[in-house]
Length: 389
Image 1: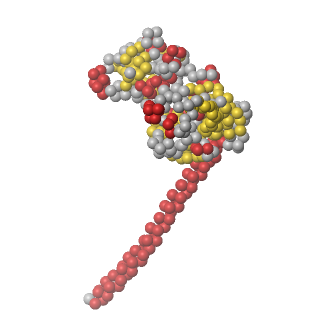
Image 2: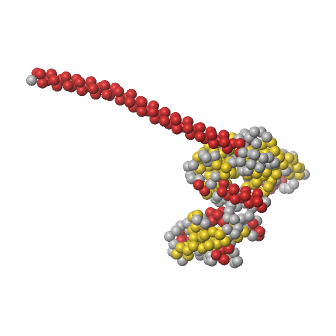
Image 3: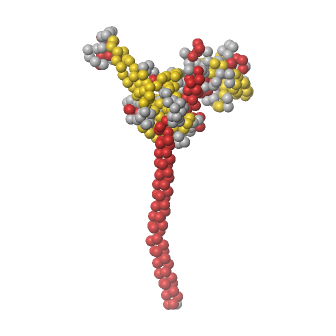
């Protein structure tokens, strides 16, 4: 009996020793695992940093600084700018004094889009400019001339006399998704070729009040005064947007910037280079957004699309058989979400191009083929190839 107890005692001591030994070794195993995890994270971040650095290095030479000179007319007052305020003018009347002209300069950015010197920028960067100076990444300076402007999208094309320039590759902005990493490159506050990083916060932003045709990419990449006309690029180093504006209550960066998508910019640019102006497509309808109430009244279950409220006589839409009450749900293979989206699609379509329209008429789906026309001159100033109610 004593022998049995002795054996049990020896086994107990052995097990306690084994468990204690294993327990003491466990923290070492966990610590080694933590080190491996940290090493993997560091390696990932290092590779990511190197990749972004390579993109910035490759793309930055394609971005230029733009300096413009213009003459501004202002009235002279004995109190400086204070009493030029409209609030004081209501009480003291007009005029304060003789008008004086003075020259001023402004800064912006641009993107080289061809080896022979075509540069894409914002219209507001070069508007009313008497002289435009372009400064390249390597500090070379050139006088530039305006090839054409488009206030409807706030885009402009200028040109310098040089060859073999580092032209950027233009990407497909339709492939952008919320969360995609992007870099903004420009000349904020005169700080040449500044690169900032962020993500795509939203796509298809409209009704912001910046232009007649709006389809903005929203990003949180830092954009500040001087960035206008600069490049928004993806991780492949492709141009996906032209940085245009910020939402700000202070005049500085607040995490909301807007860029014109590259597909819209490319269409405008190619038209300006080829024709000296922007030629837009024309469908010839009046449309409005589909509301739940209208959808219920029409007896349809879809909630997206552009509802036709009128068809212009003799227009491409009439010739294609489009009728009042038709709901346009697809244009040339792309889903139509609302009236703004359809307007932009039609405007960017080359006149004489044949496109398919998918519509819902009396609750049934139907496909129409339409030959897009050219936006008539009388509608160009109004900026409407399609009307919105």
